[in-house]
Length: 272
Image 1 (cartoon, one colour):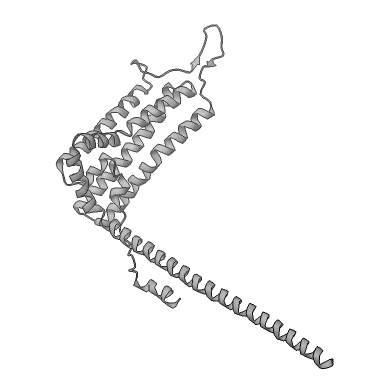
Image 2 (image 1 turned 180 degrees about the horizontal axis):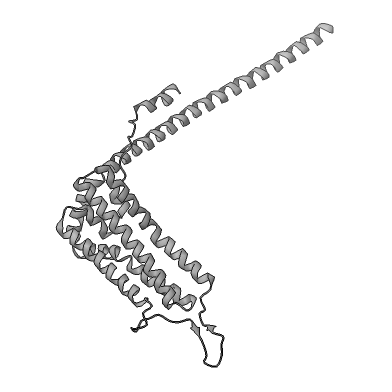
């Protein structure tokens, strides 16, 4: 038992390793290419960023309230010329806004928080290439996610006049926010070797601390398994000894009964 509880001293203590920026930005996202030194990878990442920005810009422009141009803004109030009271034709209810808020929370919260984490962690590396890459990646991730949220809100306010319209518009706009992951999947199908080399380079530069932590975690798991096995063996030995003691006690009790019976018979013969 002493060996079990003192063997914890053999496990190396983990230091406060830096956060895994590759995992934070998303290993299946083209935005992770900002962590690469490849010019081609940066071109892919900037191209996706520009495409998403233009798409959201189109939606925001169409949702602008400009009386001089033909926009997609739909007026929900109708005012008949023979009546002073205007009527609201919008069928959007609180449920529509609740679903919109849930979709936005589920799809955008993680990217916005991870973008802020990257910007914050960039300060740990100072004025270095690594710090610059992390800062650019965090700013792009947070900015495009915030733009997606803004475009979704203004476009729904401008054009959605029913709960179905609101859900439909929200899904379409949030799909644009997933273009970085779709391009990553396309590159995996078209040029898998180049993608593997690029992701391996990023993993080598930004996943080292995580691999160390995983190594320590595996050692801890192995140690716990060894401890559990030793404790089971101790329990089995204790159970066997307990059974042996019970057997001895049972034999002792039986022997006492036999001695008492013999004494009783002897006493009976003596009285006769």
